[in-house]
Image (tube, rainbow over all chains, first blue to last red; front, side, top):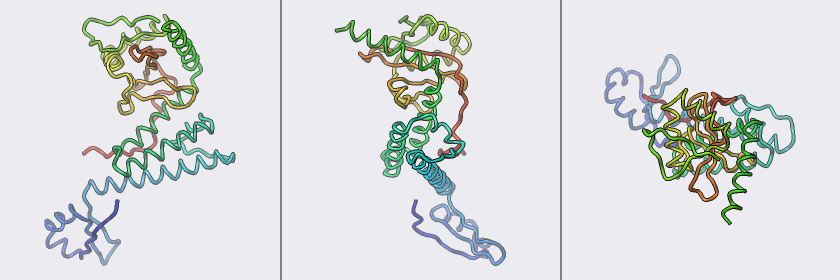
Length: 156
Length: 115
């Protein structure tokens, strides 16, 4: 998200015209310059949430990128807690995950997908890791595949 | 394959819903007894829109060993796993009930906070 305009005012103006300042802050960031203490910026809640989400995405991209590179290099990997499920997939599957993740991210950036598409994709893979490591479930999947094959043959 | 018995109050869809085996039927019946409303919602979704992801609740499973299978989160601790049969008309539930790793949560929240 690009900040197109930032207005800088003195703390005294905020005291004098707080309503007008808040109205302007709803439209663009207004930074309050203070003699004592750090400057403070007023922004709309939507803008703050967008910035926060962007920061989280950035953190996630870095963690996923680093984990994928380390795994594909064959080096020692320390998985972030929130991505520990990645260990359940082999390298081929990790490449598939990386491809889907970065494609989704790009589509969100281009507004072709809603912002929560990234989170949904990660949930899908996280759920898949639990299924992939569940032996009982994997046996059922094998049985189901056999059933589907038999059904195909019966239909021919 | 066994057709899932449907209470008269449940809506049926264009897809028939089967279970893989008697074991799975028992799992499904136990789930439906324990969480009747959630099981009904699950059944109605599978019978109408089995191949349409729905947030984190209904997801296609990823990875080569899971390919072709889907997961429906019935409740925080219960999952139904299913696939759509080759002719795309019928759905087959392959597992229903408690999930060993249910409740695993994503460590991040990318959605906007509610007001």
